[in-house]
Length: 347
Image (tube, rainbow, N blue to C red; front, side, top):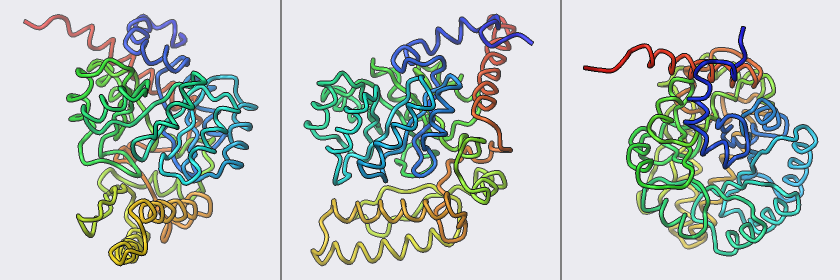
């Protein structure tokens, strides 16, 4: 059996995602999306060591814990990886300082628009910054502020999502912006990734597909729920009041979703009474999800915990090592390129 690099269409694939691999410094422009409590040092190092680009989930971590996770990742792999931070975290500047001190090469900034202080601090140390763009306008604003690359994450993704589908976002944004652009949301196969590369993407980000990796710390019950689920089982949470915008969360249906509705009512009441600011209320909701997700991922509480999953969950069929998952998808891409070449020109 020939290696991936010996495949006759390897050079074609390499050219398609060369902008992404050059920016990330990895062999394959396949990013492991940062999943809270799932994307720890072991999974991230395994994705990067397999040729992809792992991303540590730092949204629910405090500076000391993030420092430890980065240190452990650096001990496990010499390959590049990134760190994902939530911009409204109350210790965001300290988390940024940890990334600087640990000489992290890439930082992903999610949850909103990063402050000038955050951007300037990272830019001063030549750390590459990746933002999340739900539209061309937001993408242009982020680039103007100093962000180096963007993730276009559609509503099919797991966890916090926007209102627009991945395919529509890709059609809107890919032709409009020149920086490296990585597509995410509902992608679980090599052929799916190939379609976005043809559209101009620099690479693709996948989260749900790696939940059931052998190296994932997710509880066996959590993984079992993913393997049994279909795409239609990953649904969005409900927003109770349009005056208080809550970013929808996509997860598998269970009692945990009803618990979130109750929590949202409590936070909404406190917000309306002036007891909480918008930022404080948003952080309370974020911590609720982080706690519920932690119970599900680490303790196996699949009834009351949060089973955040993208609609690609229906493509998760078994527990496999990261290397097998990544190489399997690349083989699909190469087979797709070969099949397209055999179709010949259209008349």
